[in-house]
Length: 263
Length: 297
Image (cartoon, rainbow over all chains, first blue to last red; front, side, top):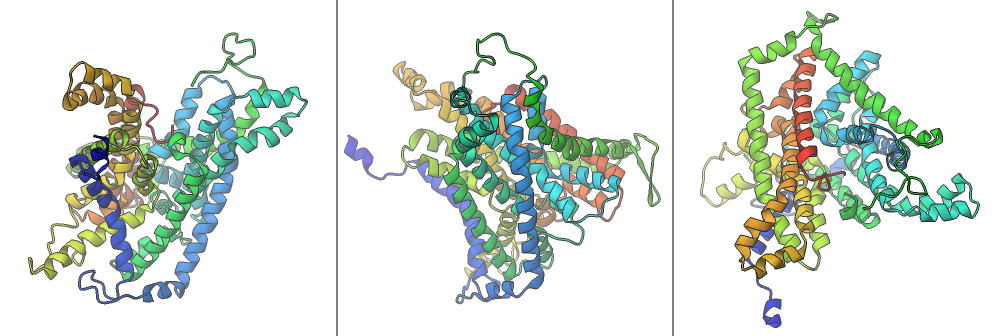
């Protein structure tokens, strides 16, 4: 009996699963294949070229947009790490009335359609008389990266027994020392994992960013501009670069957190 | 997880802590007030103001909301957005459920990897996924060029792109991971004993599924459906890129008020309509849906 079962036999559900994974990944494969095609068409694929990639490197505006994106994402994530981690301690450790409301409100940037935060922040900056610049984009990104880190760290904190901290205190450690030598090492991977996830999300954010962009653009907004003139092979090439980068970040993130549990 | 007693002797819960423990909350409260609550309130105020020539008056009226109700084209687009979002989230449920069932119940090794492979697209460039669908459905895209190379068609099929069908399929694609997570969590939590018990009592696989497994998934199904619905309802980039004029959605008319139409108060009112719909749906989900399945719970 057992041996028969071990034979690789696909059930209808198994076949369905294969089709479903193809549905999820084939579109991405199409982008990658197109990026190496010398002509615009995928059929009658006549050879292989890296010409479009070389063109990318010579596109100064594109490189500038890439650098802008890295600047925004790195700054936003750095702010979010501080705000999110302290926020996680507040959420898990402090008692206050309206905690459930606080939790729900903090989740809003993650579950509301991005367009709402986009226009709300645009109206805020107009009221303050600010020009749209790197700062407005940065604020848009701090908006949704903070809860990503906050909830990742909070779910880790919730599962940590406090006995270690009590032990440290009993042995005479100050609260700062307890945090630095006891608590922080236990939540470090959650912070790193959350930061990587937040960075990935920030790096390709366009829904909110599009409303907050003036002349200073990020990479996704720049790619979006390229798409106005149809899908050129360069669009596929830069998409492939972005795709690869995101994949690497996600693998790293998965290494740092057991994502299943943290979600 | 069990709630730890809040003070060491396990007395009743204290409502307030020592002031020192609130210091941790200062940055996050500041964040919440300045870039979430204040902007939404300002948006609400803006929605009651009115565009007068090139200026925005300070008198608060309901005129923007009345205009939305009066204009048949807005009502039509709103209804269309509901329809497309409904189709996309239903399709996402039907596509994800068998998959979640298969991975959580039938697979033993490599389950974690398979799970990750489904939710990874959630974080892989949203824009790249839109580009991919344009590359598949477009005039010179994968489907058309394959069919033409095979000699099946002479002219590219134009019904693939720039319509509601293209928007719905791309939104489904985007929504699948959102739906999958709560479904999978719900399925995984069902204890094996329960299923064994059903079998012992003579239920076959089909009956076990209908009478035991499916009812236990309902909160997860609800959460997944609602998340997919909200996300689809508010999207504007996908209809812009793949919808053409016939596939315009609520997000597009909001966008145009802040762009060339330059009617911010009307745009804010439309935005607030979307916000209210999302808030109601989220409240329902919090009440009846599954907490654990929520994406960032």
